[in-house]
Image (cartoon, rainbow, N blue to C red):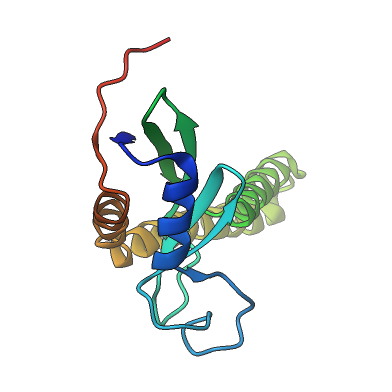
Length: 167
């Protein structure tokens, strides 16, 4: 996603900082202090935004963006992604399930152990389905968050869709 604004990078950072609550530790009911609907972090020309929610959803989208000087205007480039910790955790989850499945299939094939192998494979399939369902449900809960963050960025930074040629 790319937008263009007539504001300078410094003005964009100042407006963004004024419009968000800073992400903090999880000691308040919403996870963060303040009342603003958008939470975020700004570091140099990069920033991360998320919608405030009053429940835990590790699969909700974060907007990872950056400001790029474009000769008198600023480009706002970014994309929605899951938090890196959640991506790593889910990668480990699915890797463990795959390893468990391979070990179950490779286990000895004595007649009395076939039933145990079947149970292990059903368990693996169930855990795989559970992991996928958890991600899908988290995305469904957060279905209105992406449009809210985009609208916030466009309004706060007076930005319009940019037509940028691929380089």
